[in-house]
Image (cartoon, rainbow, N blue to C red; front, side, top):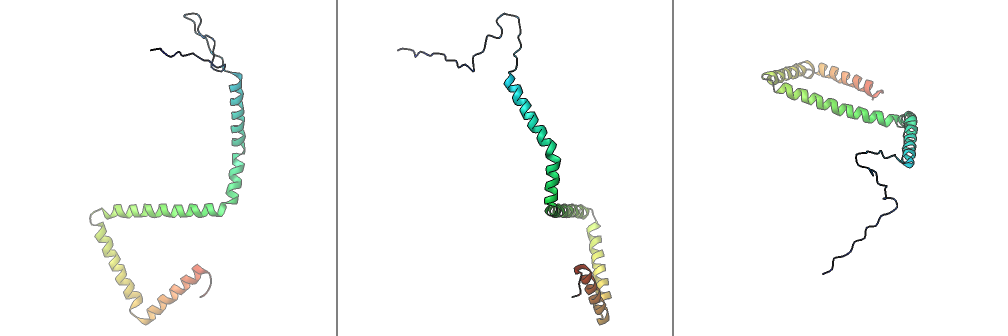
Length: 142
């Protein structure tokens, strides 16, 4: 059985001179000029981009101001609702707070019915108040 012969091939890119030809000496490998030029080119591109970044952001914000504000308000409202629900949930875990809030709610509902819903004149007053509030919110009389 014959062993296959392997020939070692070296390309011109991978050939390096013997770095440490003498024992006990350390030689420094000098970086190639091409890699320094590439780093300088990349540095110039990055600094150019960072230099024009405020202008790009300003133009972007001016162009999309209304949608950005709308999205910000929606996200803010969602966060506010989540925080409010977390606070209410934590209050609900405290003993005697939940039943106290229920009693307060029942008391306010009883007062509202007594104040606005039992007599025709007070129902008319409530209707007028609702109409006034609606016209203030909408901005026109309906």
